[in-house]
Amino acid sequence: MQKDKTDRGRRKLVLGAPALLLGVAISRPALALSPTPRQSEGPFYPRSIPTDSDADLTVFDGVRAPGEVIEMAGRLLDAKGQALPGGHIEIWHCDINGDYAHVGRPALPGFQGYGAVRTDVAGGYRFRTTLPGVYPGRTRHIHVKVRSADGSDLTTQMYFPGEPGNQRDGLLRRAGNSEALIARLEPGPPPRYIFDIVLS
Ligand SMILES: [Fe+2]
Image 1 (cartoon, protein in one colour):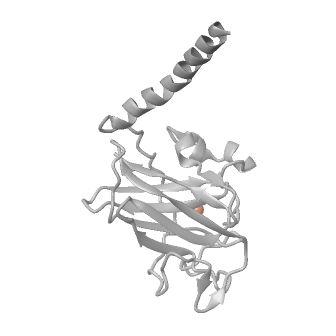
Image 2 (tube, rainbow, N blue to C red; image 1 turned 180 degrees about the horizontal axis):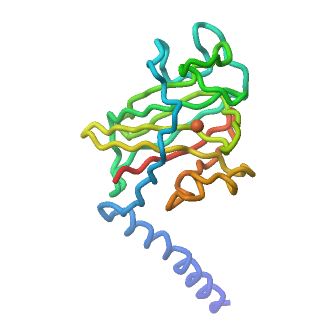
Image 3 (tube, rainbow, N blue to C red; image 1 turned 30 degrees about the horizontal axis):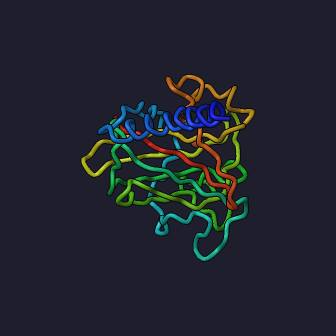
């Protein structure tokens, strides 16, 4: 009986050890993070920034865009893992038919296609938009352009987990650390794609 109690005591101690180790890790100043890979801007950055370019891309000119509503959210960080507040984050992507707005081609009514926000005090950002369609030669993606408050910049693309086209997409496959470009899905609703951006 006494031995059982002693064993339970040891087990508690052993279980407690990882928590203690975690505590040590958290108290360290910062951990090095891999910078988010750069990707090409592509030809569809808006030729003129639309009058409505807020964080909700699902409504334009008072019209609601067709498509599945999703959120894209995350944090802007430096390579030491420190939050970067006041950063400018722009996104642009195609509509459900694979067409981009603001490039001289018609897109669906209500499709804002572009949005920009500033990161908050914790480096956080969030957009509400519709799930992009897919156009020939590319897997599903959202273009992202970032400029931190101190002028560091990055142009890249966010990809969606579980897309069959991810295996065939040349741009994604050529990225040095392609896993860092694939968002993490939180089911929602609405489904939320988490994409943390690390500047070098
Ligand atoms: Fe694109």
